[in-house]
Every structure is written in C-alpha cells, then in structure tokens.
Amino acid sequence: MLIIPAIDLKDGACVRLRQGRMDDATVFSADPVSMAAKWVEGGCRRLHLVDLNGAFEGQPVNGEVVTAIARRYPNLPIQIGGGIRSLETIEHYVKAGVSYVIIGTKAVKQPEFVAEACKAFPGKVIVGLDAKDGFVATDGWAEVSTVQVIDLAKRFEADGVSAIVYTDIAKDGMMQGCNVPFTAALAAATKIPVIASGGIHNLGDIQALLDAKAPGIIGAITGRAIYEGTLDVAEAQAFCDSYAASSKP
Image 1 (tube, rainbow, N blue to C red):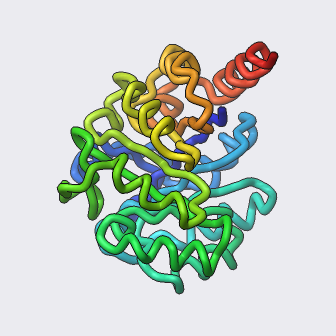
Image 2: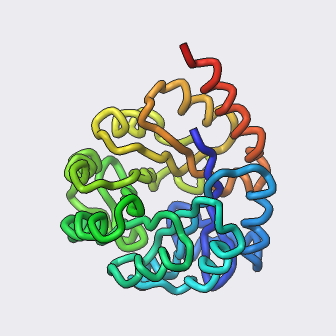
C-alpha cells in the first residue's frame, strides 16, 4: 500500500481544509513546490494534488503550480484533481507530465464522460468519489447527490478506470481515522483499485487499513497528519512495505 502525501492548492498556497470548507483552511506553505520536495525527499512514491479553487470553479485555477511540480519530478507519479471537466483539461495535464487525472463532479453528473476520457487517455484516469453517509458529493462537496458510492463505482468497471479515490467527507481533515469499514466494502464490491482518503491521523489508522485485509486498497492519501507531524511519511511507507513482505506466503 502506498502512502500518498496530499498537496491541496488554494490561491497558489498549500493548505488543508476541514470537511471541505473553503472558509476553514489552514495554510501550511506559500511554496507548494518546496512542499512537494519535502515529501519526495521523505520517500513518497506518489503525490496527490488538488486544485481546490478549480473544484469550485469547474476549471483549473492552480494549473501552473501543478505543472511546476510535475516538471520538477518527471519520474514521480502525480495525480491531480479539482476542476477537471473536459478532455482539453486532461490533455493539458498529461502533456504537463501528470500521471493521473482525477474526475470527480463530472463523473457523478455525466458518468459517460469517464468512458470517453478513459478511451482518449488510457491508464490516466482516476475517479474521485467523495461521500457523506454513503452518498456521493459534488462541486467541492457543496452538494450531496442521491447516488450511492458503490453503485456508481460499479458503473465504471468496464471503462478502464485506473483507481477510485474514496473520501469520507465527515472524516476529512478531522484526523479521527478514516472510514475503514466502508473503504474495505467498496474495495470488495468493485474490481477497480481503491485509494483511501480522509481522516488519517497516525500509524494506527494505517494499521487499521492494512488489517482490513482488502487487497483492492492500494494506497492511502494523507494530508493534515503529515503537516502537523502525527504521521511520518517515511515511517508509514516502511511500515506498509514491511506488512506486505510479512503477508507474502
């Protein structure tokens, strides 16, 4: 399982929100590229970037920062979400060197767009499913739909989606542990690999994800915990690697 540091971008700075509220943001760095360097030097094998302004405006706003990070680390897998609602935007990010684009709101409102994107950019598309009480939320979490997360995930199985990033809104930014039971249930219900997100606080939360013994969970995104020091990226990744080695027959 990969430990994936999150760099959330708001007005060009690296921030963390609580439960997706733009008015409850903590600024951790005015230099996101340097922050990316910190996590890369700490041994991460993938980065998770989010254009928060873009998620609300429906188009990229912090694209220059994303491009700068991708160009600095051309061999590091980078995934970007927030405001990705057209093939043109996906093409822009792919050309900039981003490995994966995360389609969120548009995946819910126009699921057929996911199939179109996967066909145009095979192996590059991740679907981001953010949920509250099992129902998918959209538009920067401002709206909660009547669509069940697991039902929507199953719809994308035939499209060639690389992974699903599942975030429990109630947990995100609160550092109270992620929703392990639902994350494991989602991984069991779909053939698409799942990346857990939201609420990870310490190594115990990583242990809980591993103990769920859901092979479909391939990564865990962590934000506030690594910024506030309750989780160490290198230590957590080494822990995951050791767990995987000890679990091999």
